[in-house]
Image (cartoon, rainbow, N blue to C red; front, side, top):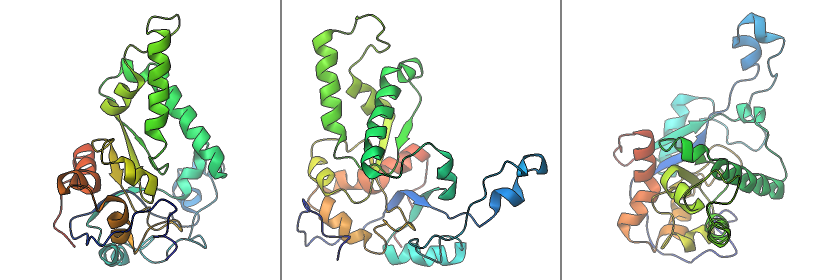
Length: 243
């Protein structure tokens, strides 16, 4: 099964039988949503997209009644929902390599601009960029922060870049075998599992197998943080009963 087979995936016979909350799932907006629903004064400038895409899972993406049964099929008890077509309004690139370069640059700007220093209660979520790359990048930034000193001219931060990340930034992940190797020692308070349903790249309906592959060898208390407790704490979601 292609979704399960990853270059650095771990073989696992663990059965995942616990509550899963997806930190990044989606609705699919109906065709013509903005043209029809925005106030008339804005409709001539409204984006004209929407509707089911060829690779998206049909059904619960646009029908709340089917959604519940499809969540149950994947073993997911609750979700944080993002738009699908609405994301086109953001300046994201289609090419995957460009996407990760863009995310690294965005994370750099977020930390080094001093925004998190000025607003210490601000929480930020990185969505759909996995996690295996993050500790390497943070370690490099910490190294040069220490090497050149925190008092150099123009620097807007006072702490290590990694401290801002661990205090104020969360990241979602859903099919990251490399990240699975890392989570035994890094990120268990900041990372949140997701299934990206109903997009074509989603782990649905095999999410529990993917969780077993990447998180099955973690102690149960750490795995609980990653698959439900972190997202429940961040969004103040009551942890539901298992489906």
